[in-house]
Image 1 (cartoon, rainbow, N blue to C red):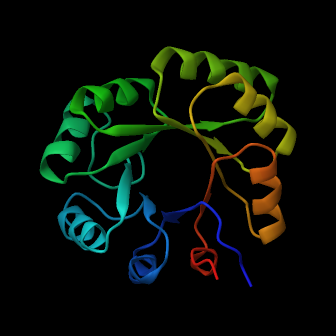
Image 2 (cartoon, rainbow, N blue to C red; image 1 turned 45 degrees about the horizontal axis):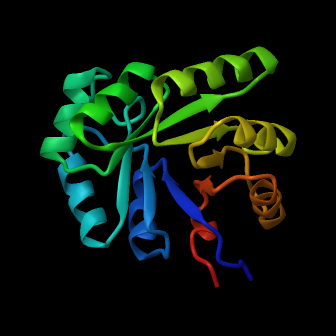
Length: 182
């Protein structure tokens, strides 16, 4: 049985929406849908008591500029955005919503660049991809002040525990079977 962990549901496919609505998770990183159905999706998720962070680069029909971020905040009442773009982090702050800066670490240079970017843009949270790097999780957590989300390639409870033990604050998972603590 899966214990209760600080899980964020990464909703990457439309067929996961019903499952996330019924799940125990309170936070959702939305990476599916498009500008045409976003209002309906947001309404359902908010009505179910979920906080919703929209991934700018994954939801169809969204721009990646300050106007798109402002529109998401005003029209759809998103709780925040997930982005790889530094300018979108600043736009989120301007729009009064939270931001998660997603970073991909493939080598030492990428880690150093990511830390510089985080220190410069000051996102509310940072998401490290992939999440299966305990040493890198520790190093990054000791370097930044923001809460750290890790995600990507995490499949087993022992990987969740290892990431949390390494300093992760949240685990972002797309597998609906991992969304409910027992």
